[in-house]
Length: 335
Ligand code: DAH
Image 1 (cartoon, rainbow, N blue to C red):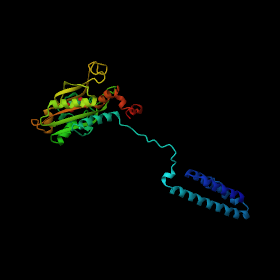
Image 2 (image 1 turned 135 degrees about the vertical axis):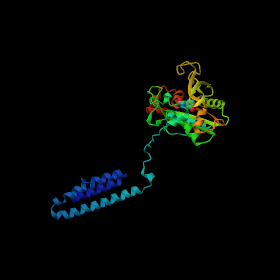
Image 3 (image 1 turned 120 degrees about the horizontal axis):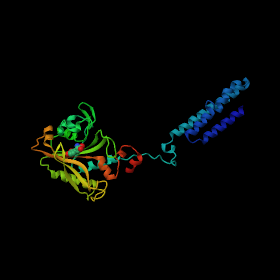
């Protein structure tokens, strides 16, 4: 028994001398001193020994136990006091941190905003849950307008809805500030449309509003032409097509020459050579009245565009749903 104990001591110490890391030391501790450890077993079996042996074996076993515990303690302290750099194995391969990338819609929003910021507009945002006054009334959209129907707007409750465009932020800005005003407004908008390749119940718009003395349609045209060339390239042509919006007069849709076929006519532009990219116009005097601006003194222009549409054109994406499905195989293309 005494010999056996000496052997255990020798082996345990030899093991400790070889152990370089915490896990190895712990393994030795468990192997000898754990509940089923070799030394523990001997200590447990002491009472079966004849009493004349018990004292001697017991003393040695306990001495070894104490010695081992002290050694282990000592080694743990040494490892812990090592400088950090020495505790890691620098030859192991590093941990590659997963890194994401901007969503393509965010990229387009940033690009649009940057272009207008370079012209002096400020980026502002507004609430997605909006009151009727901001989404409709102050924008000169009458009560009987079809878009005020619950089928065309998500209503949360009376007089609280999910904004169906970013135009309400025009009103919020004008209520807070006196002209001159020059803002660009990105954000989410909501419409209860059936989802398909070109429709989503949530999408993004960017709204623009510029108001000062002597702002004319030429300023609108110059600004949006500059934008179109920055966004889609210098060879892109623009055209303004008369249209109607309640909050602008006159109003227009802005088309750019098709960026796929260069204007010759293809599937993407439905053989017209043109792509509609946004609505725009001169701010209607009724809107100025609603916010208490003097419409004889000031004039301004406004515009609004759908971000996903622009992203689809620019990146050649043919289904809007791809932007919202969170399929990383799709999204990682913008790394
Ligand atoms: N709010 C319009 C829409 O959602 C887009 C729009 C058209 C915004 C003309 C404007 C504008 O500011 O002047 O379809």
